[in-house]
Amino acid sequence: MKALILDGSREGDVLTPAAVDGMAAALAARRVAVERVALRDSAIAPCAGCFGCWTRTPGECVTADAARDIVRAYVRSDIVVYATPVTFGGYSSHLKAALDRLIPALDPRFAVVGGEVHHRLRYRRYPKTIGLGTLPAPDPEAERMFARLVARNSFDPRQAPEAAVMTGVMDPEAAWRLADHLLDRAAVPP
Amino acid sequence: MNALILLGSPKGRSSASFTLGAKLADGLRERGAAVSDGFAHHALRSGEETGRLLDAVDDAGLVVLSFPVYIDALPAPLTRLLELVAERRSCAAAPPGTTRLAVLVQCGFPEAHQCDTAVGICRLFAGRTGMRWAGALAMGMGGQLGGGIEKLPGGGKLILRALDMAAESLAKGGDIPEEAATLFAKPLIPRWMYTFIGNLGWRVLMRKNRARRPIGYRPYEQG
Image (cartoon, rainbow over all chains, first blue to last red; front, top):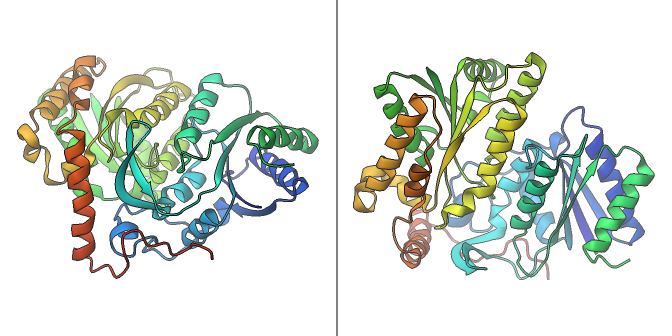
C-alpha cells in the first residue's frame, strides 16, 4: 500500500509536524510506503479557476508546477492524509492551495451523488481520505467543522473518510498512538 | 460607514464574485457608505500590497467576503489572507464587535447548501477574530452568472432583490435578513436543466480550446 501525506503545517507550527511524524510512523508500522510533501516548501501557484485542466488538457493542470506531481501521487496512492492546523474549522492555506489544484483528478461532467450534484470521477480508484488536524486546545465547534469538511472532500463516495484532531499533542509516542487509532478507524490493515 | 468588499476569485474584475460584490457595493453607496474593494490574489503578490489590504481590513466597519466555493471552502489565497488578518488581530487585540463580517458566496453546483461549509468557516473566522458575524448570502448555479446578473433567468430579479435587502440592512448596522438569504438561494433554473447546459458547456469549451484529449482522459493512471 502507498500513502501520501500532505503536510499543511505553517511556519512556526510545532503541532502539525509532530502529528505528521506520528502518522508516518504508524503507517510505516503497517508496512505502508509513505510519501510526505511539506507543502510550505513547495511552489504551488493558486488555482487560476480557468478550467484548463478540464477543457484544454483534460486531466492535467495547464500550470506546470509541484501541484501536477501531487495530483499524480494522489491518484496512485491508497491513502491520502490531509495534515493541517485546523484553521477556522478548515485547512491551512498551504494545504488548501494543494487541494484547490486537485480538481484535474475529477471529470468536469456533472452527476448526482447522494442527492447532490457533483463532478464525475475521472479515475477508477481513489485514495481513502484521512483528515489529521491539530489544535493547541480543544475547540469542539472547529473540530466538528473540520470533520464535516474532510467528509465532503473525499472524492470517491465508495471510500469512507476519517478525520481526527490532535489537541496540544507534541509527544511523539502520544502522536503515534493517536495516529494508529485513526488508522484503525479507517480500516487500514495492520 | 467604511465597507470593504474583499474578493476571493482569481478572475478578479471579470468574476461572478466581483459582479455580486459590485452590486452590493452600489446598494451600500446609495445608502451613504464609503465602499472600497480589495483582491486577495493580487494583494498576496507583494508584501506592500498585502499590508495595504490588511490596513483596509483594519479600517473597515464592515468587511464583505465575496468568493466562489473551491473544494467546499474558500480559495487558498483568501484563506491565506484570513490567516494574516487573524495573526494581526491577535497581536493588536482589536476590540470585539467593532468590525462586522458578511459573506457573498456562490458555488458551481445547483444546490446553494453546498456553500454551507465555506460559510461555516467564515463564521468561525469572525468569532475567532472578534468580528461580529453579519450573515451570508449563498447561491448555487454560480456558472450562470458569467453574463451578469441582469441576464439571468427572470432578469435576475431575485438576486437583485436579495442584494438590495442585504445592502439596506447592512448599511443600517444590521445583519443580512433571512428573507434575503432565502431569495438568494433559490434555484435559478431546474437542476436537470443546469446540469444539462453545464455538461454541454464543457464540450463547447473543449472545442473552443481545441483540446486534443477526450474529456475523461486519465493521464496518471497506472497499468
